[in-house]
Image 1 (cartoon, rainbow, N blue to C red):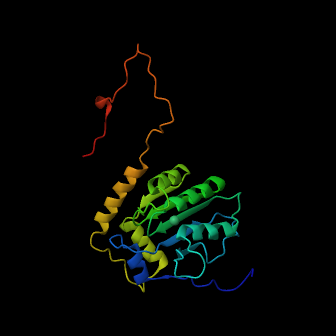
Image 2 (spheres, rainbow, N blue to C red):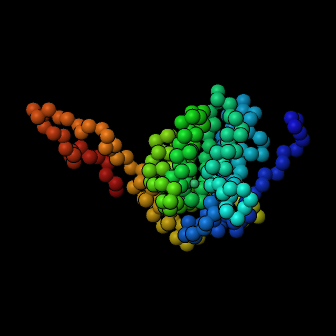
Image 3 (cartoon, rainbow, N blue to C red):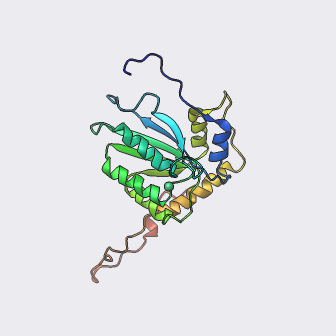
Length: 224
Ligand SMILES: [Zn+2]
């Protein structure tokens, strides 16, 4: 297929599908995942029309076993057999954050593929716990090197321009977009903030030295 003529037009998402699924005040059962791969010079393994695309989870009503969107993305990226001598930056925009199982699998992928970096922007946090602790999953994913954040109007607009058949219309933010985004961001920060692993021994300070406490005098640069 090398040297084929005009580039194929990239597939775009229906604008209502985008809004219904990514709108952070909605509760949708499906998960949509838009991704972009920054291709390094010298890459010839990612098919030309596949560096930016989207996919969704395979639900129970579809043929074959159900599969979460993140797993389908891992299937895809693994199929490219990316060049280990190059560095690939992947950004995913997901309508729900990864569940515990997907987060673990993404973390494993990152540990095994140090030539791939991953940024995830989620519209909302998936809080169902039937597959394990989603909070633990998100922390594991972060520890494996992924950057995880909540989509703000900037990312929604970027997706609208990049992945959606927007028919020339500019992105229209919905009511409560910013408030919901702030809420989920705070929630995510709370989940991801580092906590001391219980397995570590407590810090030991010789009794002859004063125990260091919070030094409020040294705090600088307060807001405002
Ligand atoms: Zn999942």
